[in-house]
Image 1 (cartoon, rainbow, N blue to C red):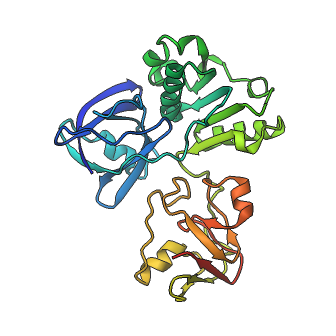
Image 2 (spheres, rainbow, N blue to C red):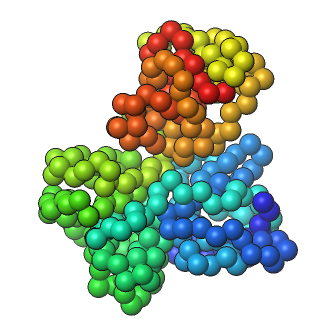
Length: 316
């Protein structure tokens, strides 16, 4: 759908908040805390950004975007937008929702990973739920949305940590007492998320109570293709068999034969291309599926993952 950039403001060093409204003034689709939208930044360039305004608002969507010097074009393109520009977005989708009935929620944000965490904190505060926020950044000047974290119902539950002041979150202490009714949510750079997940595993958190959302795949998540072997993908609906070369992605091989699979991030992060596996063993290289979901071997992210078996039958 088409929306208009109604406002753009700096919320921290190199971080802007973008306020999007419908072009015709109609209400936008409702969303829940943790949801994101796909933004068509330019022709062929689609990026996912978490919504950070209150879920009850349908007159606008707000996203926060860090201008990343290592950008593949998304953040630079967003920061170049001017107020009044019309852009296309998807309806909201939520792969990072709050769990129903949690007795206590621990929200951990690293840098720009604060955007879904902020939305979650405000939703939990509005419902009177028990929660705590731990927000880690390089320095105060790079800490976005501090004004909203200072609001009633959130300020006394939020702890800031600034690297330049030598303040680091004590993850072992924060995660020391897992329980069936306690849920953990983490978003931020891959290294930050991985550190939290490692500590959570050491503390014996139930995997189903640990929720994470990556903005980009870790460097180690996808290989450069060295050592890859060719395999075949069979389409379950027609029986058609398509060859996937070494170093070639499944979606690229399918597209070359006229079979389109909807995708977005191309890194195994967003879940857009998630496809059911009918037969065969996937070689999972994504950061979207949980360990239990990977072990089930019944779904795959074909934008980055491959096959361990000679033939992989997909529900296409």
